[in-house]
Amino acid sequence: MNDASVASPQPRRMRQSLRALLAGFLVVVLFSTGTDVALQATGVFPAGEQRMSDGLFLLALGYRTLYAIAGCYVAARLAPDRPMRHALGLGGVGMALAVAGSVAMWGAGPAWYHLGVIATAIPAAWVGGWLHERRVVGRTA
Image 1: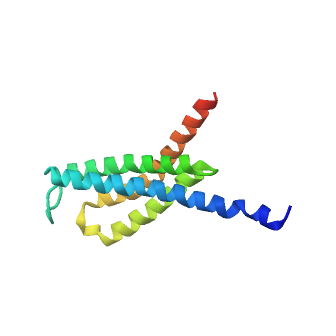
Image 2 (image 1 turned 60 degrees about the vertical axis):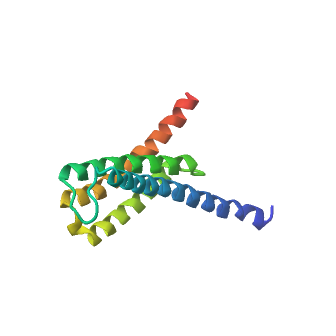
Image 3 (image 1 turned 90 degrees about the vertical axis):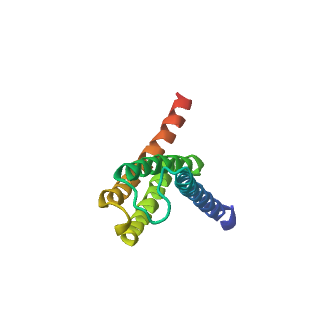
């Protein structure tokens, strides 16, 4: 075997990993943004700069958590190997973005909402990875 044939799977696997993470990330962003737009268009969320009620923030936290689970499931499903690591990796990215977003937008909502988005990132990632593992184990049993 030459060195090129031994080294070639690594870049391919890295591209597959990045695609899995990107696909999961897009699920979260597109579904979250789409739901935000739909709820605003239907009048559920207030338009413009009006502040939402705590109940609406709770609704947003709920669907964002579900979409994070779905996105991490997708990342695990598409991962070339170590699906839970991919799900948790995407959760780590989500948590970092949640921290950055919370710092930037702290006054735009209640503190519990910002902290909730940060606090749910890793557990949602774990659930997404677990759902994938459960699906895979269920097939082989």
